[in-house]
Image (tube, rainbow, N blue to C red):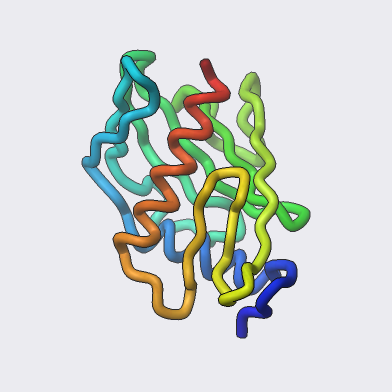
Length: 144
């Protein structure tokens, strides 16, 4: 059960990561800036436990990249790296974005820094896609 106005539990975070994995979004274009667009080509970690993170293939003007979404210390940890750097516990040479999650007054998992929220119990695929789009925009904004 989701606790309104509280912290997100590890179980809720695992469910959120499962929803990202099960969405398997692709190929979908996402505007990441006034001049740039990337294409999300699908989840590349379908056979891995979500506790190890969820990875998506992303292609843009800067070439192929891998987006990794993990849960660590009550935060979503977002990283973007070249495909050859995307395996293992961390992604060398990339910055991390630590996004705190909470539950809002309606029981939705919320990432205020991203402007994203979702009701894990009855959110639709469109809702999880919207959340993922916010993640993609955030990592590309940091990458410059």
